[in-house]
Image 1 (cartoon, rainbow, N blue to C red):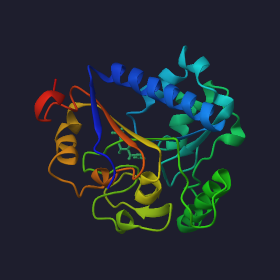
Image 2 (image 1 turned 30 degrees about the vertical axis):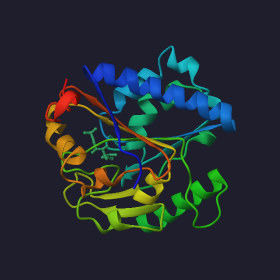
Image 3 (image 1 turned 30 degrees about the horizontal axis):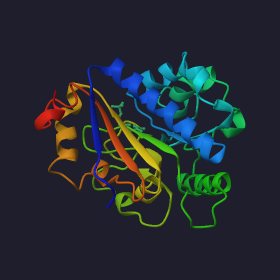
Image 4 (image 1 turned 180 degrees about the vertical axis):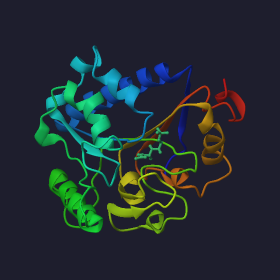
Length: 251
Ligand code: 6PG
């Protein structure tokens, strides 16, 4: 089990987006300095859109070395990339179309494929090639952004899903009966927990209960199992999402 999370509470969703964009820019600079490139995993859902939009504006648009940035995705719904529910589409519209990241360095998950198991295996191979890892070895992302669902899911790791217990594969196909688009492909806990840094972005009063559960008593929810083994974990919350946390965090 990795280090305890660093919980940061921001005044509102705009402040959350600003802090998250700052974090991306800082980690990017550090990674490019150290290794010449920056690997970033984008989250889906609605919450990160404001962060992506902020990253596409000055000063972040000009501060991040986009030509040295490699973009991956934490999960994808089984829809084509132009579909309104596509995580890739959201990230493309808010960020990727607006910054000079080379298209060859953007690795979307082809979850629209008929055979999602094969598409998951293909994404695992893509990761292996991008990171030059040996077969079976996990990539070490510089930064993974994640969201939190009201049921405690993150990426497409849903409570009760057998994929939450995956110990070997980096990528898996998922059937999430409760989700609007039930077929999905997701990074697994071993892949998330091999990252150098993971940041949850969570906003809104509807998330307050699950934030308390994940950071408090319900350590078995999928989001609570994200604990980078040799990396850092930060939770960026707006005040509404942090409202039910005990102590000073609920400022
Ligand atoms: C997805 C996501 C998922 C998301 C949460 C929170 O594809 O649905 O990656 O894990 O981050 O459901 O979503 P919101 O930000 O929309 O609440």
